[in-house]
Length: 321
Ligand SMILES: NC(=O)c1ccc[n+]([C@@H]2O[C@H](COP(=O)([O-])OP(=O)(O)OC[C@H]3O[C@@H](n4cnc5c(N)ncnc54)[C@H](O)[C@@H]3O)[C@@H](O)[C@H]2O)c1
Image 1 (cartoon, rainbow, N blue to C red):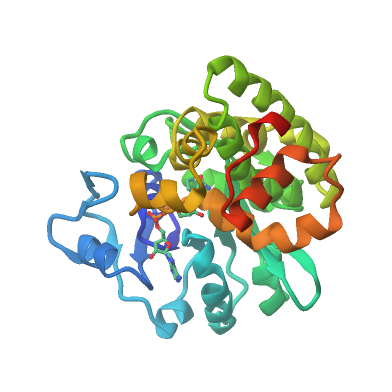
Image 2 (cartoon, rainbow, N blue to C red):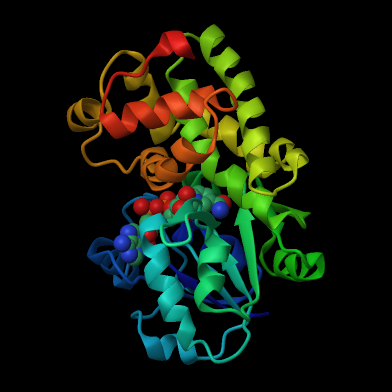
């Protein structure tokens, strides 16, 4: 039994508490940003508006504060989306002990000053040198996990024993865990799959989308290797596994389908998805300054075409894909 703190009461953070509680851990959730999620979590019924279920009564809610981070936990889980990562890496400076941190967030950061792409764990380590960070990624729709539907994910840490220790705390009959030492590869794959899901969604026919799927895998291998991850990781749950679920359904591939029909991003967003976060677009804008300058179009034509179309808000040129 461990004391686990989950930071981020959105769909994924809240769903993640369910297997953790089932394993008889003491689980506390906190939400630093969204009033809606704070109200969901502190209400008596604990009905979560994004998951559309009642969360377990045993789940404790605490207001986010610097003091909370100073309390003794055996594991701290980061489940904020990408825009919350700078904030939380600053806050984690207040951690006194070397408590293990597990990052669920998918995405990458562009360090303008160093002109470098950073994974989320690198971004957190920038402010917190000695921290003990693992990442958990892979195909996981929060709504399915919250309903205890079978889900398999991957935990990565250079020290595989740490990853396995965390896996033991959180795995259940329906939440199964694989392990990897390739933390960079796992983080790169789980981020860029959101961009490739948009591209696959643009296909307009299953035949064309399948061809784009195959070409996406080749580009994912190139990029993973470029950023010093292992090519083989593209074949793992963090790569092709997560790409499948995102391409089959989800906000990125839905946006991709509008781009494929000839809408510009802004028009499609306003007309069809005004309240949805499209993570692929957020990531594309974050990494575009680096990718478009540093990597030849010949190596990653799908990615470059999509980034240009998003940046200039121009139609996606499918003929080039
Ligand atoms: N590792 C996995 O198995 C897995 C599975 C699904 C999703 N995810 C990732 O988890 C993350 C959260 O996804 P979700 O579905 O819960 O999203 P969500 O929109 O339901 O929740 C987003 C969370 O981030 C917080 N947030 C947003 N902007 C913020 C800001 N500027 N500052 C601080 N906090 C902010 C919100 O308050 C909320 O807690 C995403 O990066 C997603 O890709 C991981």
